[in-house]
Image 1 (tube, rainbow, N blue to C red):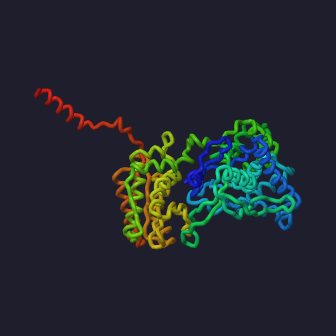
Image 2: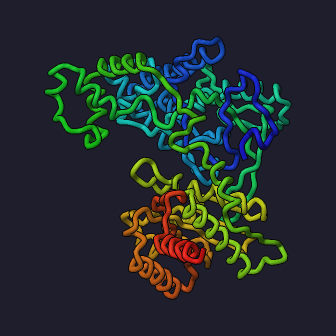
Image 3: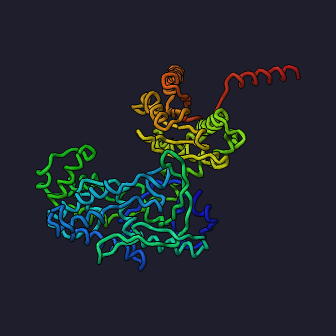
Amino acid sequence: MRFSETFHVVRSLPEDDWFDALMPVDTSLFVDPFLIWKESGSFWGDAHAHLINFFDMVFEMIGESKGDQARASWRQAANLLVFPEPAEFRLGVAEGSPLGSGSGKGLQEDMLGGISAAVSVGMNHIAHMESIALFQGGMGVDRISDAVCNVLKSYFIRYTKDVAARHGVPTETSEIRNASWSSEYRKWVAESHELPVTEVEVVRGGRFRRVKLPVLLTPHRFLRDIPIVSSNDFWQWSWSEMSEQLRGDFNYDVASKVARRTKARMARLHPEAVALYLRSVEDQPLNPYPVDEDPRRLVSMYEHGRKMLPASPHTAFSDAEESSDAFEAFVSSVVEAFRHGVENDAWRLLWFGARGAGERYAQVLFRSVVVHYCRANDVDLTGESNAGRGPVDFKFSKGWSARALIEIKLVRHKSFWNGILAQTPTYQVAEGVRLAFFVAVAYTEEEMNAEFQGKLKQAARIVSDAREIKVHAILVDATPKKSASNEKDEELSEMLRNNLDDLDTLT
């Protein structure tokens, strides 16, 4: 459910410009600091300056350390550059739950490397935090977003409180990590705040638990699916715009093949290029992700999944039926609902132009369909559960004894057969789960041929017998279908013509 559904909020005012996030899972959108930078209003207009002040403070501390990691100033800077995943926002790439594994340590190292490199070439402050990523070689968009959400969390707290007060949304006292930061003491500050709270499902110690998690909202105009600033774009811009001296410093290759260290080296050797590049970005139109149109279907899969339900087989599972056979039948029927929906019309949701979508889209669509069945039957559905040896796509659970794993794999994936013969059974053993469904999504007629289908079923039998587990292989036909209005049955058409001819003869 979305925030508005959970708290029965109807948006009708101009100031209700917040993104209506899903509560149980993350949406694959990110807060882009360049979109905040363009703000001129009194509240958000100050936010970007607040962001830059934070990094100016860190630059100063790195400079004081002179690169000596044993100095107190370096250690203080390192502590400030730990950005825990801001789960309160429900943004990012953790499909299963907002409480992902976090990127604090890795982000800390990337930030330290980028700032140290910038300081080494004489920079003591920045105009845009994205330049740190260029000096370091390029951080992931999710990591940049994590940093922004942590540093500006006090702004998002105030914004969310205003929304809650305006609509009478109930709140609870919540302890917020990194709620603010102190320039005087050079450290993060945790604070208690009255915020909306929802429950999310997590797996801890091998068991499902529901935990309370506060909600922080963000204006949708700050959200993007890809960053405005990227190391690839910087490389291409520099190659086309900079002098012959720059061309002489590097061996040219297409941007996608140039190692991130090479791009970072170029930024460190030519900090003036970074400044000019960022200025050119400032002059470009800065457009957020079009949430309403949702061209990449990052936002609306939940609603699409709900629309698929009437056309899907009905299923139910009660506590009285909580046997292993009944649970297996329930999960099987839920997987069948997904297959049925995709093969009838929802295949369109998995196609972008002439190419089938990536595996993640199939996983998101699967969750969007089956979550409604699971909620109606009080069955826990957890995505990307950590099985010890790696992530599984989904886990169904009704208590401890009734559990099943679901792995969704595109037939075109290079490690497809390894998925069913090794990965899925390994996850089952690690989780102590006997039942699994390996859902294969096919985009071409060749992938749907009888030989492949036979081989898939045989692979499921082999691994089930060898590991003493149960693996069901399900093939989903996501090939493009003709419109029903264009379908023709020549044989039936001929029969109809003959019958009409006979009728004419009789009359």
